[in-house]
Each structure stands twice: as structure tokens, then as C-alpha cells.
Length: 400
Image 1 (cartoon, helix red, strand yellow):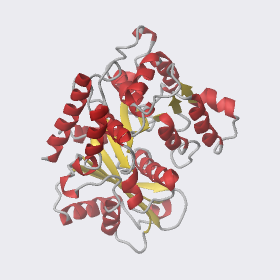
Image 2 (tube, one colour):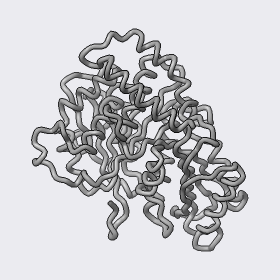
Image 3 (cartoon, rainbow, N blue to C red):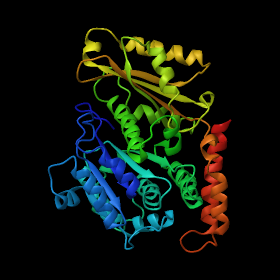
């Protein structure tokens, strides 16, 4: 997928108001040239979409109308999905051709990052459907020949954000169904190549308070580190590495664990890994992790002076694993950041862990809302049973 003459190029596709808030944080970020301006925010509600673009304008010199034309797409015939994921999926089905046309502007992309909050209806409903369509060759598009084949080799990475634990049962119903649909298609095949997860309440418990902005900034830091690893280092860890190893044992869900601003003149690398591991974005048992990727970002000056080296990063990563009695598949890498100073950032990208600690917060609420559903055209009982079965099989396999 990645060409020899350039680094991996990403595009960001965010759907729904929550996903849109996260996507605006990418706009004009000098830290991550891997994305540039390849950003599309989608919503079924034009007013919500305009609110998202208003946030984007804070980082741009363009006027609202220009930003709406270049980076926004309102889709579907209804104004909103009713906070029910089948509504978001239906809207994407109705306007899939327009979605394809808009994403055609990103035909240089090697990888897509899809962002959605899983408690809602719009992003949670549309993103799993869109990924499935792109990976399976647009079966719902009448004129397949009207599109190019550039999407066929692209990698599809989803970032799903879990609702707060205190939110209502409908949001947890959406989240459980959304996770299943990101992981598996209706016929129980793998959907997204990689599913990244973050839980609002868990991030807040680890000290990132300040409503959604603080949580979103934590998410952006993790993505910056994940993408940056494939751009400016000899020992490259790139998206192809992230998806290849975990997919071999059908464990392609991930969560970031991040520690930033650590003084490299004071702390040892192994301690930095410990700090990151204590700041996972979802609750988990570290002993159930099957694969991990360690990314250390340090000032260019520290790297040039030999104060921190890639072999040292690799050795510290191995020592950290041994101290926790872990035997993980994975890699480690060192990447530079501009400027002087001694602040070092660490990302542990953890894969294949037991999902039950996350789902335990939602199953009861899921069942409460499910008991009030009567089935129907939007979501039949048979479709729902398959969604639940797919998730349970995937979770049980990774809990062993």
C-alpha cells in the first residue's frame, strides 16, 4: 500500500456531531502532516454540521461557506438519526453515491481514519456501513464502473468513542451494536482493518476532565503519535504493521495508552512505559493484551545528541514486557518532534485484550433498551440477534 517515494497519507472521515468535534482538532495541525487537509465531516443534521464547521473556522482563514463546501457533507433525507443507529445507516445507504463522490477527492490516501462516537445514531450507524461498502467493492452502488479502483488497496481504521457510563440505556445499546458492526459485518466477516477504542468515563477517571474538549485532546494526542510513527524514523512502525500482526489471531481491536511531557533527563524509558500503561483509554487487564506497539517521541535535539536511541527504546520495551510477565507480538520505535527541551511522549498501542471490562458497563443498559424494542423495518430481531452473536463470539475468543 505505502509507496516508496512518500510516507503513508491519511484521510479523516468523521460522522455525527461527536465525531465532528474530534475531527476539527485535526484541522491545520502542524504536528501531523500525514493528514494535511484531507478531512470530511458528515452529518444528517445540517445545523449540527454547521456547528462543527464553526469550530473548524477557529483554525482557518476561510469563511464558513468555503469550509462547508470543501469539508462538509450533509447526507440522508431526514434531519437527524433520532439517536438510533439504524437511522444513521439508512441515511448512508440513501446517499452513498454522494459519500463516494466526496471521498473521491481523497484518492491519494493510503489509509482512512473513520471517527464516530458510539453512543449516538448518525456516526455509529453510518461509519460501519461505509467501511463495509468500501471493503466489499461498493455492492450498494448501482454504477460501480463510475468509480475508480483507488479505494481497493486503502486501509480502513475506525476510532470509536464509548459513551459515559452514566448515559442512558439507548446510548449503550447503540455502543454495543456499533462495536459489533465495526468489528464484524452482518455475515460475520471482519469489517474495519483496525478498531481503536476510547471510553469517555475511563479517560476522565485518569485525569482528563474538562468536558469533551479534554477527552478529545487526549484522543488527538494518541492519533498524532500513532500516525507520526510511520513518517519520520528509520525504524518505521506504520499502519500496515498495526493491522498485520493482530489480524493473524483475529484480535484487531486496540486502545491507546499514553503519557506525555515526561522529563527525559529525569525518567528512565521503562518508567515512561509504566506511566503510559497506567493511562489506557479503556478499562482492561494488561495480562490479556496480545500485541503492543511502543512509540516514543522525543525532541530532535535529544535524538541527535544520542540522549535517547532506538535500541534503548526497544530494550526498555522488552524489559517492561518481562516485568509484567507479558509475551507480546509487536514493535517499538523512536520518532522526533521539533524544538528543543527534554519532554518525551510515549504511546503504547495495545491490541487483543479482553473487552469484558468495557462491556460490563453497558450490557445491562443494552438489555433494558432491547426489551423495549418491538422490531420492525429499521432493525429486525433477526438482524439484532446476529449483531449480538457476532460480538459475543469475538469477545469470547479474545477473553480466553
